[in-house]
Structures are given as C-alpha cells and as structure tokens.
Length: 193
Image 1 (tube, rainbow, N blue to C red):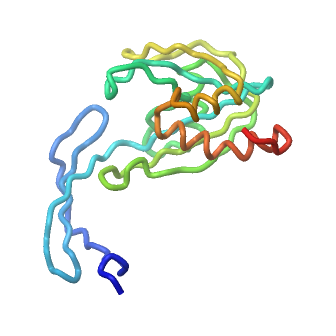
Image 2: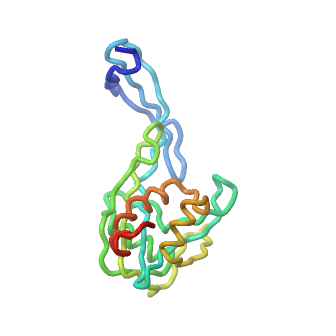
Image 3: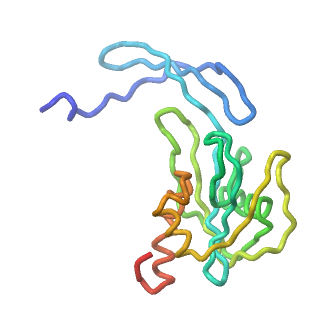
C-alpha cells in the first residue's frame, strides 16, 4: 500500500483562541494534536456566520439575479441573492428574508436545496441553498448601507448558459445552480439545460 492511500488520522482539537475579530468573520487559532505522530500545531481558521443563497424562479421561468461590485475581485459579479444568516436562523426563513431585502421579490413555496462547506480547509461555516418558487416583485428594497444592487430576472436557460461560459464566476452560485438543475430539467420535460 502506498503512503498516500492510507486513511488520514483524525486530529484532536486541543483548544482555540480568537486571533482577530472583524465585522464579517473572526480569525481563530486552533491548536490540534496529531494522534499518531504526537505533534501539536496551531492552524488558522476563518469563522464567518453561516450564509444563505437563493434560487428564486418566477412563474415564467426566470431566475432572479443580482449584479453588484465585489471587493474581493475588484469588479462586478452576477449572482443569486443571498447573505449572512442570523445565529439560529432557519435557512429557508433567512433565504426568504434575503430575497425580499435585496430584490423586493417574494415567493410561494420555498425549500432547502442543500448545504455546502464553502472552503473546509480554512473556513468553519456552511452555505445553505434555498429554492423559492413563484417569485414575484412585491416588496420594497431594504439594502444594507454599502449595498448597491442591480436586480435582473433572466430566463433560466440563459442563466445556465452564463454559468457555463464564465458569465457567472461565484463558486457558491454555481453550486446552487448545480443543485437546482435537476428541478429545472424536470420542469422542462427532462431535456438538457
């Protein structure tokens, strides 16, 4: 058996300290002990709140999108609505709240599509994906102080084309679209997207 094919060991968490606090996440120093080698080492973990992203589909088969400036890429990004969840908040309730606040859209049936760990190597949070059916513009926008958002509703097939050709670059948005794709295919009668 080659060295790379053994099952990895489960490191033991010895403790953690907050190394830095920011408005959107804490930076933790987590000390772990390797159970076989006996080595003790501190690893850096980014600890944001959980997030929620929403695939909102209108009655005529359009997906609600937001276009906004993103500081991490120093440019604009086309995304689905989403944001930070409050501690203990239900993902579906959070998704409906974020959809309404960012876009003015509300919907009928809503359900959880799934959840992922955005980057388990260094992040401790989860991102939850919510599907909202029958979305319609019904509410006033409630943006945060630094939000400036262009709201667009594009045909779902066009959104999938953008996802495939690099017009959508946000990894979590691509995750959400992947999880929604079987639903969209079923609505289209099983044809390809």
